[in-house]
Image (cartoon, rainbow, N blue to C red):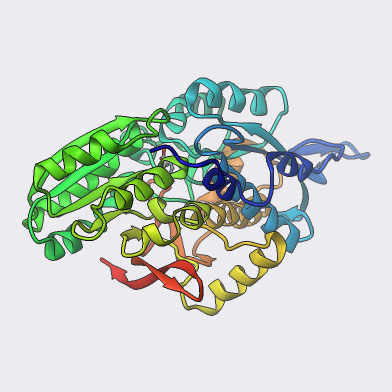
Length: 399
Ligand code: PHB
């Protein structure tokens, strides 16, 4: 069972990578301050932002959403961040550190970006940490959840507008322990994020009395046929499943889970990336009933979110995703920080990031915690059919 190309077409969504590149505003000048005619320093009129997201590979659709979210904020604010015209230079993160690390280095050393924003993959984020720490340039992670970059390996120069893998997954543990009618099987993509998601979930799940029926990690970026893994789940006698997949892998997993006949009797849970955005469009009815934890849903019933969803739909003719929100918020945070850092240097910019305070986001209000991670609410969501489409209905807030 391989994802049909029509599904992948649905995943590709409306704005191709080329359009993202076209969003680059080519303007003269560079980040930081410049000498004025009297010999004093003046803030430069422009600020250069490096946007590092996957433009290729399994996570390319996520990168596209992030580019769209960042660009929407700029479009709503006259193309400026902190009063300066933003010059956005994009680079392709690809599927991991082998491509993502050199692309980030190029943004900083060759393109002279004042700050790099983006990064989808946890392994890329971990691979980038030392480079940003040592070169004293700010990295604003707008997706990758690697625990250590705001934990054991935190740096003055690394900030995150998204989530930590251990937190977004831990939010779901006790709810599943209460609902499951027996042992729960844990399955995830085999790389840093999958392992950390399962560990985070397992901690709160077991603490609440949940029992694990089996555990499996599938080769990341290479697994299209999940049938052998689905057979193992059935053979384990598990009464429910917890999973981490995103992008094209999430489409294959959820569709095949249903085709294999597990969906009826064995409830499927996961972190919200499993059923987000274009992934959910491609899964369609196969995803109905899947329950997830996430810090965003298009269905959040607040004026701020409604206004954001309407603006995003108007700009891109599709619903936004958590990836778009995380990047939109990264632009909002930079808007404030750049205004508070007229010299434009890395040290000054990270100091200003520490002072941005609460962010009025479509996800609800959040702020940076002491480790530079997003302190925020998580929601319990369930995929439901609604008006001929499928959405992530918000059931409750998770504590
Ligand atoms: C990650 O690698 O940290 C990651 C990737 C995709 C997601 C979530 C987390 O949707």
